[in-house]
Image (cartoon, rainbow, N blue to C red; front, side, top):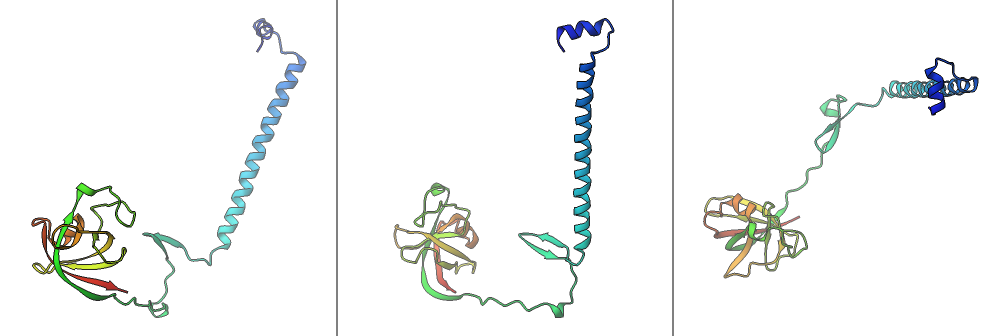
Amino acid sequence: MSKSENTARSDNTLPSRGERLRILLRLKSQRQMALLGTGLFAALSLVLGTALLNDSTAPEVVALGKGATSVEARPVAELEPVAMVPAPRESALGTGEASYYGDELAGNLTANGEIFDPGQLTAAHRTLPLGSKVRVTNPRNGESVVVRINDRGPYHGNRVIDLSYAAAREIGLIRSGTGQVNLALLVS
């Protein structure tokens, strides 16, 4: 409000006819916008409700882990059999001394370009192709672990493989630091 309007109001006079007309037009446009919004909301709700009612034939889908499943009940006999994936064959590579490397190299790049994480089941080998899967077995306790070759080495002594900390822990090499292992290449 301007100063003149303020003084006009303080002496209990009514607003001018033009001022009253402006206020009424503003209220009318606000009322029209509110009615339009309410109408659009009602129409959208009606369309969505109709669509949901018409889609009663589709089974309800429920998220389950990383996938989804239907809650539609079907007899087991109607289900298609799942193709069994054959277990990978193993090709013996021999035996040798293994060691492990842990936190001292964490964050360094490996030979295949990824960042070394001692918590992953990985290993370094001098000649096997990067990405190869190898079963490493500790003959003293029978424990074994499958590792992925992602680095080159070891270059110390007569060791044949350097395991990550997690892989060495799986087969019980942490306490001794090194140990004899049997190696087998997994072939798909």
